[in-house]
Structure formats: structure tokens, C-alpha cells
Length: 295
Ligand code: ZEM
Image 1 (spheres, rainbow, N blue to C red):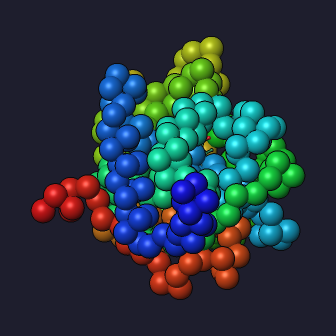
Image 2 (cartoon, rainbow, N blue to C red):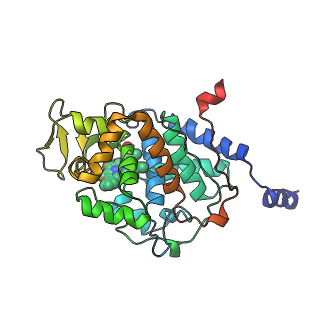
Image 3 (spheres, rainbow, N blue to C red):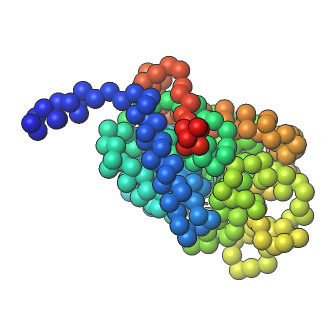
């Protein structure tokens, strides 16, 4: 009966295997991008997970991934979130199939799936976020502004609780995806393989000569050799600031170190704003890629 079904649903306690099923569905959708960008929804799904988490303010305990407040206006309309309706729409399809999952868990699991399916490091992940309300939405200005310098980058990421090493590691995500002039105003990809997770972002920063692009758009750099790649002012700062440069160089020289440090910092990012007692397991889970499950 209907009442019985409702009772079963209410008593349903998802296990690691249930979250693996959600992961698998997201992984399939990532590859169903057709003509969209470079044939992958991975980068934009990753960016949703980052913007859902990067609003955290450790001094007030507000923001972060717990309540998935980007579902609400005005946060959904913040300039920094332009274009992320694409990713939220994709995640909504998954939510229709797995209605028991919270939006915060769904979006952060999307970030994990995007990194792993694009050949990145394994990201330990825990379930337990709950859906919040519009009143939990965060004010505009909590996410980084790409036109700014080192002091701004530090203000934003120190507010989340990160240090210089973690900042530089996290920014390596710009190996993936691209800028869209109709979203941020910036244009172009950072690397030649925008759907494969590598340390190429750092390598290119040091190996290419970067010059200011001559155009009517916002100030960005282009590589002098092919003029087909880009760097944001905030990306270039990672080679100019002494402390940032030390880590960027280390990641350019050592892909394993980058993978290890990115994984740790990204796992932390995904948990910002989630009270520890909410997590359903004390030990994080490592979910399998689609490829690993084929074996
Ligand atoms: Zn990004 N990012 N980001 N970023 N980002 C863009 C795209 C992507 C900054 C930023 O302003 C921009 C991190 C850090 C920082 C991704 C992941 C992560 C774009 C282009 C901009 C302007 C948006 C567009 O036009 O579509 C700044 C200033 C950052 C720090 C200083 C961190 C940390 C990330 C994850 C860990 C990803 C995957 C994209 C590509 C999105 C896509 O649609 O292809």
C-alpha cells in the first residue's frame, strides 16, 4: 500500500553501496555531454561542488556544503555562479532517481565523481549533509575574484581555513574545463587536455611565456606560443608570490605530490560547514570509478 511504501522510504538507511549507485549515475551523466564543451560535464559539475563549499566562513561557521544554499535566490544568481545552473540541472536528474540523497551530499559527490572519472586522485568522501533553507543562503562576495592579487586570494581562502600550500593545490583544478565569455567574461581553456586531471596547469604556468591578451574582454593572459590557452590574473599570481610559487613549482615537478595534496585539500573543501556529528560514518569512503567496476 501507499502507507507501507512511505514507511519503507522513511526507514530507508542508505549504505555505501547506495552512494556508489548515485556516483555511478553521475559518472554516466558526465559522459553524456555530446557537443557540450569538450564532450564532458565533468568540469562544470566540479565547479558546482567547489562553489557550494567555498562559501564557508570559519569565524561564523556559516556557508559551506551542508545546506546546498545555491538552490536559492539570490545565491543562485550571484555573478560567480553564472553557468552553474547547467550543473544543478544535471544533478536534479540524479535527485529524481535517488530522492533520499540530500542536495549537499549529491553536489559534493558530483565533485568527487568528476575528479575521479577525469583520471584524478581518489577523494575520500563522507555522507551526512542536510538540506537547508533560503535563510541559510550566503551573501555575495565569498568566492574568489579572478581579477585580483595575492592578498585577495589569501583573504578568501584563509577565511575557509586553508593555508598557502592548500590554496595552490586546489587551484590545480584549473587543469580542467574552460572559461566561458558568457558566464565569467573570460575565455578559453587552461590546458590542452581539459577533461583529464593532470599537473599541466602548473607545468604550463612555468614552461610557457604568458602575455596579456589583446582584446576587449577582462584582463587575462594567453600563451605566447599557440595563443590558444589562458590564465586568469589569480592563476598567474601563483608564479609571482614567493610562497605560492614554491608550491606551484613543487606541483609542476611532481605529479604524485600534486595528486596527494589535491586529494587531501579537496576532501577538506567538500566537508566545510558540515558539523562532524552529522556524518553517517567516522571513516570516509573511497568510491570506485566506473572503470574499476568493469574489471
Ligand atoms: Zn575556478 N574558475 N577559480 N576553481 N574553476 C573558473 C572555472 C573553473 C577561479 C575563477 O574565477 C574561475 C578554483 C579556484 C578558482 C574550476 C574549479 C576550481 C572560471 C571560468 C573562473 C573565472 C568560469 C566560466 O566562465 O565558466 C578563481 C579566481 C579561483 C581561485 C583563486 C578551485 C579551488 C576549483 C576546484 C577545486 C573548474 C573545474 C572550472 C571549469 C568550469 C567549466 O565549466 O569548465
